Image (cartoon, rainbow, N blue to C red; front, side, top):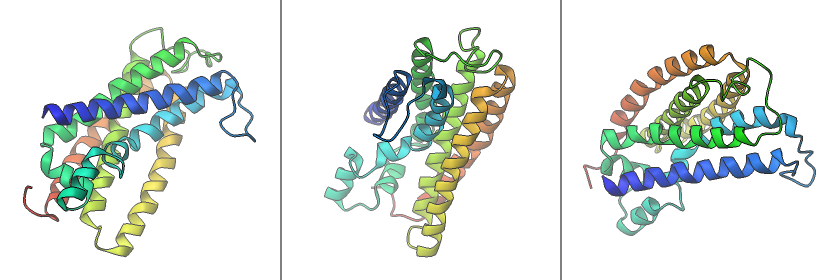
Length: 226
């Protein structure tokens, strides 16, 4: 479990560092591409969009083709990377990814807000980040929920990986989910802190049984524990 926790924390640190790096570049007026116009006034919306994108893809960072788990899977020939992870991680180990990701990204958001050029519209989540705990807790809950969605998708991908049509449909659904999550996080940035916190908590409570159920189904498609 210690090894798994270390990998989970490493994933959180990597996504938080990516978030801070991209935020800092745009906040300083540095374009992400040569044809971009980096306007610091766009930073609040960008920040929350990045939160959604990075949290939903955090599981891919941890279990992707360049991860240590993938290298182990290649050596052992033990099946797809995430299938191996599902067998090696306990349920608590899988569920731990969400709160760790939430802590890392909420702390990264707090750091970025401290040096943001645009302080947001009064009354919004971004503007009120230092007025109380609710904005930070809302980001924590939302990032946790988004990570759960990413984990649920990977479990679904393991369940249907041998059915080409369903795999393609699943990929398209994941892209659509990514766009939808970024839009939802964009709403969160401008929301009232209390409303944003309550919505984030409700979504989190919905995603917890989702990730548990998806994992249980995915485990039925592979070999017995390796």
